[in-house]
Image (tube, rainbow, N blue to C red; front, side):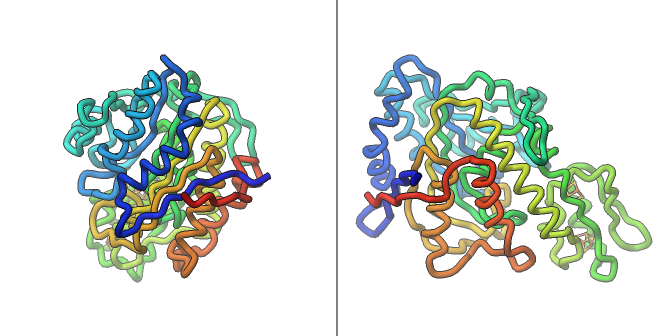
Length: 351
Ligand code: SF4
Ligand code: SF4
């Protein structure tokens, strides 16, 4: 069976707002399924403090207005992250969100952090898939019936390509759930490359890196597997097993997405292919664009929307393939199909 994916391209005559209006006009009937009085969660991410690539509140407002017109009750949400920065607890996270314009008067609805002040709201949901027997998610997930996932497409330092599956699987997990997904990563220092610049020591959220015999050393029993040190090291001195470790991480994220979506009745996924950067929105600095703006994709099928978006973006060149790891960004599609997260076959409906 082919899933429908709607696509509105951006051009000199169609700006971002018009692009989204085109998509929302096509989704009118789907949005009406979110009936009067029903609470609808809109999942997005605001990015790190210096990041500018996130989907802006002015655009999300258009989705909120559609829902408000249908007398549904939307709210926008994100969850706390496991690494250092302003999204590690809800107080700093909300202050950052407000500074980026995620305010009720701009959004037309509330913005909340779904997993509590310290990210400790972590309910266990039984799963029984290949890698994970259970997942840990904010308790909201077990009662939320309506979900719209708003995703800014980016590259990713570990998995290569980050879209709706990543936004749901990793982005809707509790902090404990995020940690479990990353626990397959076991970074280690290549001693002869390490200059002891200490960038990794300073960035590590777990305090897992110290000096040992004039080089940095990672204590594997303390490491969270967040991968921050890998991107922080400018000397390519921190390595992981790209094939095995990253494929395992990808599979866990896909399993989380499967578990989360199996709890939620009505779902729509909207991928924004604008300002596509080499790394994800958690990386603010030195994050170059890798491809021209393309447009917006939307579907009821999370796998179809991610694959269609990927196919359009890589028509000329696979900009998401990493030199160390050419398969993880493709493995997420293969594994998502294997566990029936969605369909790889899609019909691209250009609007
Ligand atoms: S960032 Fe790289 S070079 Fe610097 S201390 Fe860490 S491992 Fe060594
Ligand atoms: S050692 Fe690296 S991967 Fe492990 S917690 Fe620290 S920054 Fe994250």
